[in-house]
Image (cartoon, rainbow, N blue to C red; front, side, top):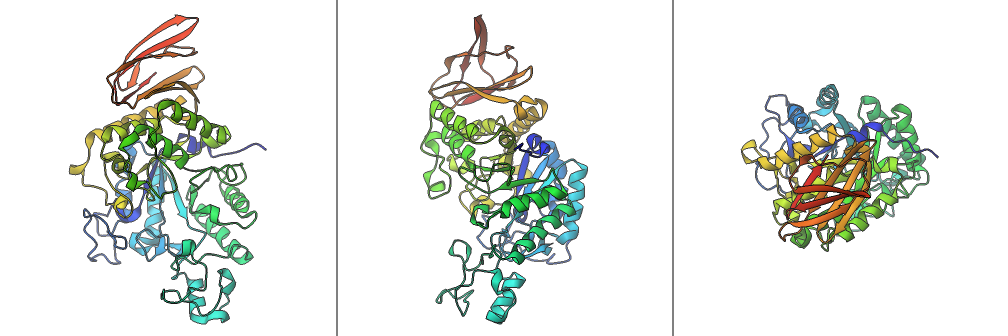
Length: 484
C-alpha cells in the first residue's frame, strides 16, 4: 500500500498554543466577561484559574508568529468547557465564548490562511465531561435517559461529584469529571465522525487526537481518516502517542504522532546530567539517564527505522508541550542545553513544534507552571529568540533540512555529526554537548561536495581528500554548527 501524507506538513514549523495563556486582546471585542477579574497574567498559574487569553489575542500576534517563521499552529482544545485547558468538553460545536466563540475563530482562521499559516485543532474524542449535554441528561434522568448507552455505565445511582460514593461509570484515568464514551455504540461513533467532518469543512487543516490509544473500537481510526481525508486529502491527522507508534502509523490511521521518542533521547543527550529528575520522573517519556553520542545515534537510528519515510516527514517533533515541564526548567536553567536541543530539533526530519514561549526563554516546571502567560516583551530572552528565528529560517531556506536524507557521520564521546542530503544539496550538522575544551574530530564522509560555509555557529573546519572526503572539525564544548 502506498502511504500518502500531507505534503505541507513536511515543510511546516508548528507553534503550540495554550489559548488561555498566549495572548489577551488589546481591543474591546469581548462582550462576555470583559470586565472579569482574571488571574494576574504574569503570576504563576493555578490549576483551575483563568488568565483570559482569547483568539482575538492570537490574531493580533499572527505578524509576530510569521516573523519568527511559524507557518502552522496547533491549538490545545478551544471548545466550550469548564476548565482552563478545555479537555473537559461541553460542546464540540461551539468554540468557548471566553475565547471569542465561533465568530472569533472564523476570523482567526481566515487571517491565518491569508498568511499561509495552517491551523490544527485538538480533538478530545475518548471522553467528554460532566457538563456535556448527553451525559448531563443521564445524570438528570438516570436509566431513562436516551443517552445511557453513550457512556460506560456500571451501576446506579451515578455519583458525578461526591467521591464518597462509587462513580458507577468509567472516567478517563479514573477521573469522574471525564466520562468515557462507549465507542462501540454506532451513534457515538457517528457523532464523533460528524464533529471531525464539521470542523474540516469549516476550514481547519487537521486534528491532533488526544489519547487515541484509549479508543479500542475496531476500525475507528481507519474510518476517521477516511472521512476526514474525503473532505480534505491534505488534512493532517496526528495522534498523541508517547511511545512506539507503529500500529497507528501504517498509513491507514494517522499521518504522525507527537514524537516524544525524539524528545526523550534528544534532551538526555543535550542536557545530560543537568536534567532535573523531579520534572521528568513518572512521566510517559524518559529523557534520562544522560546519553553519550553513540547511544544517542543508536536511538535516533532506531527511531528512523521504525516508520516509513513519508511518515517520518510528517511526525510532530517536539521538546516540550503542555503535558511536560519546559525544557529550560528540565535542564535546570542551562540555556546551552536548550539551544543544542533546539538545533537538533530544527534539523531533524518531520515537522518541528515550538511550545509557545519557549522561543523567548520562558521557564516552567510541571503543570500548572508549564502553562504560564506569555511574557511581556521586556522579559524576552533576545538571544533565544534570535537563534530560534535563525534556525527556522535555515530550515525554510534549505530543502535538505526538511525532506533530505538523514545520515549519521560521527558519534563518539560527546560529539555527534550528521548530514541532511537532497539531490546536490548537502548540509552537515555537528554538536558537541561536552564541557571539555574544544576537541578535534575527524569525520570520514562520502559526500559529493565539501560543505564549508558556516550557516550557524562556528568551528575550525578543514577538508582533505584521500579516497573519500575527510572532514576535520574543531568544535568548542557546549556548541553546535551547521555547514552548507
